[in-house]
Length: 481
Image 1 (spheres, one colour):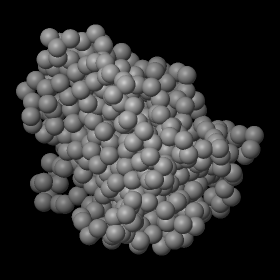
Image 2 (cartoon, helix red, strand yellow):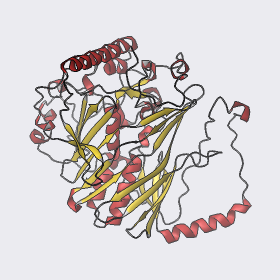
Image 3 (cartoon, helix red, strand yellow):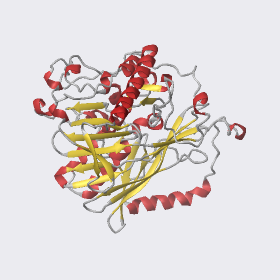
Image 4 (cartoon, one colour):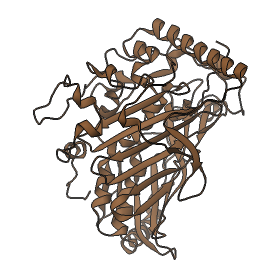
């Protein structure tokens, strides 16, 4: 290989209520059967060969065909040592560092907690809607916790669709650009309650011990029943110890979610881990109105849960907490890594205690429990495990560009690493040859399902869904596999 495969997704893959318990883990996944005309909504339902569930909904697989491949025999240093301080744009990584998903499937993990969008749509007041939207924005990055494998770089023209009638949405994404790598996505509620869309192109840098992904691209959520649109950008993600030591992930930066109709804004601070790891995974912020008056305080962890409370009660609690600070002495974290080792390893912060819940708070979101065998399945969530499942007869319905049909990802999922590596190299060479042919003919690449335009709410450049995918006319789709 000549090293032209982008490493853009290394980090985003290295790059997943109320306090009474109304939204339990079980009914987060299924809040009632949504009856839709499958002949219009997808077409996959027509195959009729899915394994049914007792309640009539599809039963998804609960494990991968083969366990995770060990990475202990591979050294990433030999690949990255010349890239310190540079943007990672043309680096080929051994397949052992991958996970058996495409980056397009990774984006689909935003939808794991889609019940929060449905909940937002049902709320009569804009403040309550913003609370659920904020919880959804945080939940969208929760699946990255402990995910240290990188997804496969999508080929130009690659697509991924997901239809979940039990969760009330359908989703389509396309790799619309190769240099720079850009993934566009579009999702809609099956009961016409929302649209969710955006384009993702993170900028990555390697800093010697860590890889950092600065997010680029706008995420837009439209609540159709309220004629409201919300936009935001994801936090920065950093993977530590990519050379030596235990890999660990943190997210940091400020996420601002704007309600373009009301002017309300939610400002969320994803805290960096800090010197002693006390801030690891913490999220703190508030919702403010157009005049910047704080209406609601939000706190929690993106790996665990999110809570909210009235600003007066929040400030009262914090004052009491500060008064008690002089009675407690901070103790440096004992993680077995003295300063002498600091030049080699970014010490893994101690696992912090669960979020301290302020009396009077209400639960906005709690992460789904991962399956017991998650560690042997690349730390996938239950939702993620099902993403590359190819059900009987499905290949007759899917676009020929769908990720599920990629032989390298399928080979890795099945535990055949040699085949996966060979197929990955073949597909990359096929992509390069197609690019050379277009250059000879001076032909521009034509995207199929998305087009360049401006975000209708921010005015910034964006990729917008052209429409027509679910009518399933796949004639003219490129031959990329």
